[in-house]
Amino acid sequence: MPSTYIAALPSEISKLQCLHTLRCIRELDFDKFSLNHPMKCITNTICLPKVFTPLVSRDDRAKQIAELHMATKSCWSESFGVKVPKGIGKLRDLQVLEYVDIRRTSSRAIKELGQLSKLRKLGVITKGSTKEKCKILYAAIEKLSSLQYLYVNAAFLSDIETLECLDSISSPPPLLRTLKLNGSLEEMPNWIEQLTHLKKFYLQWSKLKEGKTMLILGALPNLMLLYLYWKAYLGEKLVFKTGAFPNLRTLSIYDLDQLREIRFEDGSSPQLEKIEIRFCRLESGIIGIIHLPRLKEISLGYKSKVAGLAQLEGEVRTHPNHPVLRMSEDIC
Image (cartoon, rainbow, N blue to C red; front, side):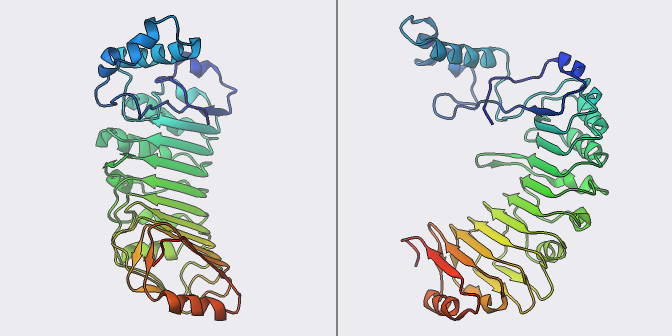
């Protein structure tokens, strides 16, 4: 998806009542300017010469003018989402909408999102938003009966905000198949249990605790892909209990620095085919792969440490499904 310098959608967008897809992602330049200090763009020794020097290309000059416009119009923010205008609810045929900057969008326009009855895919940025706006958002999401994909982002780089207002949801969209949550949760919301059609679940910076997390995830009957990235889980053990994760195909783990052990009990994850691990130190190892009858691949990537590696290699060699063990050069 190409980035643009659009910071806000015009009110005239509401006239496009046959529109099916609306994708907007704002350009964020991490290299040249400080996003926290937009006026630096105006005095930057690179920016101004490119605007006024005739020797630079037309494209470079246009880009710098756009940067200046964003700074002077106070459109600069740590969000790649855009402001959505009042009247967005008139787009009754809209099926895809991403990414909405909730902080800069009015409460009325956020509420109107609940009128998009045909919406199948929604992406929102909640970082910097008030609790009141987030609750209005989640009340609107409850009304989206056709929604199949939901992305909620409350983080920017290492600045992580909470997603605690997700608890205000009581009846989530019944057809949801993909859910991406980027922000602090600590406890898994109870309504996740209702997502019987969920197939893909991406969690980042969630800081989830042991116990309830795996009980809720393991009970999802159609979950096929589980991604736990960047402090998504704070427990020392990931235990896949008997009868849990009946349809899980792929488990991907990245940068869970407190995780020490992954254990599969007999009768757990009978469809699991692939395990991917990056930036983890499994000092107690990976235990119970013999209980994974369909296992095809274990991938141990960059900056991973797995105890009992020789034993794991032996278990892979004798596994009846003959899985592949892939390891980066720095594995120990």
